[in-house]
Image 1 (cartoon, helix red, strand yellow):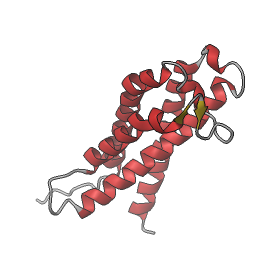
Image 2 (spheres, rainbow, N blue to C red):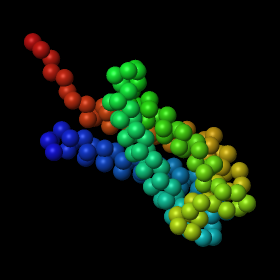
Image 3 (cartoon, rainbow, N blue to C red):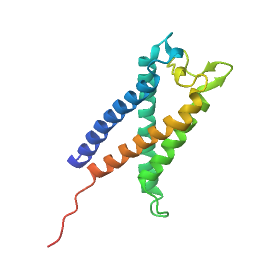
Length: 157
């Protein structure tokens, strides 16, 4: 592994840690004091679990953006950031739809329960407010990752 790819890897890992911290802080702020979360795991554990899932989704979206820009970039004028944002937004916006199975039951409710974010009207709030904020954080992650890891161009004299 050359020094540039090692630098890229460490930069992306550091940015992913910052993304997780920002996402957790935002989700915990939204969920803190939620009376529906007082029993069970509580807002802290559910915020951590959802922040881990959102961070993993952002990394997946970034991977999709890199592949699409490399593969489709020759045929279409497409950037890695735009594909990353589209994949991230589609995942975050659809999260309430695939977490809630209906009749008061949630997927992963015995494994990694994050149902406090989607009970009652919270699923709509997640779709309208939380998903765009998470997408904006994903955009910032990808922008900074590309900006920091960009190879410097040398001026010819």
